[in-house]
Amino acid sequence: MKANVGGLDRIVRIVVGLGLIALVFVGPQTIYGWIGVIPLVTGLFKFCPFYPLIGLNTCSACHKDSGT
Image (spheres, rainbow, N blue to C red):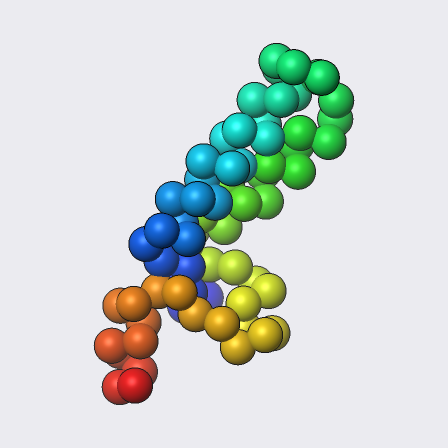
């Protein structure tokens, strides 16, 4: 599992994830807020399983490792 989420992408994922999870406790209090676990986990682990499928990599350190 090679890191493919970096920088601003990672910060946005964590903030959005926490915001969605907060909706479970405050606001409309629906179960759909738990969808925020997905962006939160991908931001914390710096890996998105969807990115390799579409050939995307926002991790600048990974670009340096590959020599491109």
